[in-house]
Amino acid sequence: MAERGRLAPDLVLTGGRVLTMDAQNSVAQAVAIRDGRILAVGADDDVLRLAGDGTEVIDLDGRPTLPGLTDCHVHLASDAGRAVNAAECRDFYDPSIRTVPDILDRLREQAQNTPPGQWVVGRGSPLQDFRLGEGRLPTKAELDAAAPNNPCWISFGAHVIVTNSLAIKERGITGDTPNPQGGTVVKDLNTGEPTGVFRERAQFLIKAKDSGVEPVELAERIAIELEHCLRRGVTGIHDIIISKEEVLAYQLLARQGRLPVRVSMLIRVIESAFEKWSLLDTGFIQGFGSEWLQVGGIKMSIDGGFTGKNAAFSDELVIDGERHPGLIRIKQDELDDTVERYHRQGMRICTHAIGDVALDMILEAYEKAQHKFPRTDHRHRVEHMGNWMMTPERIARAKALQILPLANPPFLYFMGDPLIEMLGRRVTEHGFPFRTLWDQGFPLSFGSDAPGYYPVDPLRDLGTAVAHETLNGVKLSGEEALTRTEALRSQTINAAYTAFREHELGSLEVGKLADVTVLGDDPFSFPPERFHHLPIDLTISGGKVVYTRDSATDGKAPVRRVTVASGSCGCACIH
Image (tube, rainbow, N blue to C red):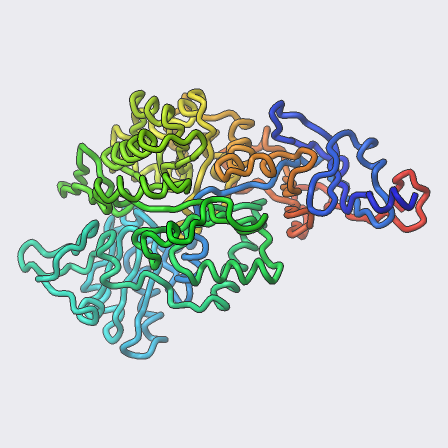
């Protein structure tokens, strides 16, 4: 009995419907966990028999249980740093924001509470001009009236900001200011003066590349965001990192034992506070770190974002009669050089490419590097690949190069309606081709680009991959939808593969790290277009319960937690 007690699990989950996401998609009833790893998976009686003195037993009461969920593309630390004191103008977070005056009211209130001369900052949503009653963004003159004594700017996603006149004056920008490489200072066609709209790299003429928040404070803000993740069953994220303060903040949380989500850091080496060759100099490659905090690769962006109307398409965008030729932020020679050097060192590379011009550029760069320095398991990624314009030729090329596409279901869900208007046939003809990519053998996983746009929620995203429809219920293509099982695998075992961690995460199998999500309803009967309402009853990270839903609202009894008492009969009865 003494030996049995020493080897007994710390935690047993019993009476569930355990979707293991192993190679056979096996379904079990119970899971035993010890020292943060899975000790056993199987039938209730077999697993309960392992329990000993002090084992905590959780009765799942039939709840669906699966591996912890992962979001493979977020900007969590950066967003946490920038969120302080910003006026909330995002309609995705606050549906009461419906008009330009609503935005101006928020900025005016912020300005009235800010000393003259200090900066006023607002946060809007991407493509918000399509949803506002006026069908446009606020103007420089309107921001002048809302914040007459303060330099002011407001972002609408990551790719465009609008400023007032004081902001332009404060930064010394005039009609003679040239466009930076990969950015546009939009100027009035008649006067030649800045209109207040700054796209892509030109944004950094106004705003700083880092938040200016010290690591200790940033760590606290990150911790709050990670708590939100736990409430949606998230136990892993791939976070785009742009400053050493963000790295230090994550390390601080890890040292304090306060990192409840496993973080893979994708270090931006261009357009960030890092020097381009920083990680080459250190010799770090993906996997460096601990079970909780690792380097996941480098990140860079070739073209602009479609939300700023700056993506590089061969057939340029024309919206309301205005031409948008797109922006190339990294030219081909610089791209080739950066890819080659990091590829040769063995570092995984993650590259943003929205338009087909950018997509072809990165496939060419990857192909050149592979030809010179063949590697069989680099797992290079193309961020946003798989949203549109995936021709058979591009699919074949990406497959031959073993590239991982990182598509974005939230773009379809939240922005699909204006996307159809903006991109036309680029989206309506085989847009978001999840089924095609899956059938071609890509280990498909998804990234949200949250939380600056909308909350982190992989359940919402995989539900969108199944429903294949927009927020307003417009179904794009039923032929490109995934099955529910495929979608669940995309954010569990496939996401683990995307992080080089399929041998320790992503499925509920003996020996793997014990990250578990317990749902409050059945994902096989719950409407997929409403998966953002699919309840999470329990989140377990590293074998510890880190989130429990306070009360069940669907009639199901709350999760019952008991401990096997010392001196029990030895038959794993619960006393």
